[in-house]
Length: 134
Image 1 (cartoon, rainbow, N blue to C red):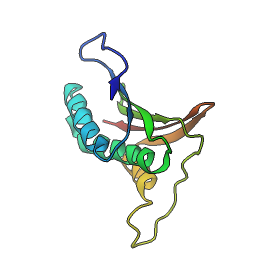
Image 2 (tube, rainbow, N blue to C red):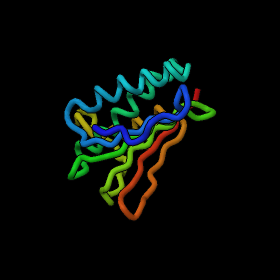
Image 3 (cartoon, one colour):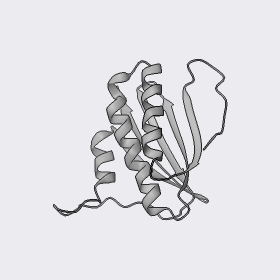
Image 4 (cartoon, one colour):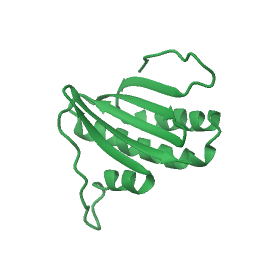
């Protein structure tokens, strides 16, 4: 993992890291996200931010061939914004999972948890983002 910028203010309003997502990456990123929401004095958003971040990172792990991404966690005026950029041109499509399926609910869960979410396509990949308001 590489932290790609140094904070210039305290508390920093943004955390950004580039990494190749492995099996344990979402767990480590949940700890980092929880630390930041506490630092930003919005601990009530902790569970929601952690779960949304886990779902977005799991999508990278399962669907992006090189499993590389950049995660940005940003303190906004209204809450927390999570952005996960990857180099795959394939845009995620929300779907309805069957009752007994063990996967396929990630984006539906992000939509349910967040106040807004979307996908931004880039020439070099895409950013899937969501915002959780206080």
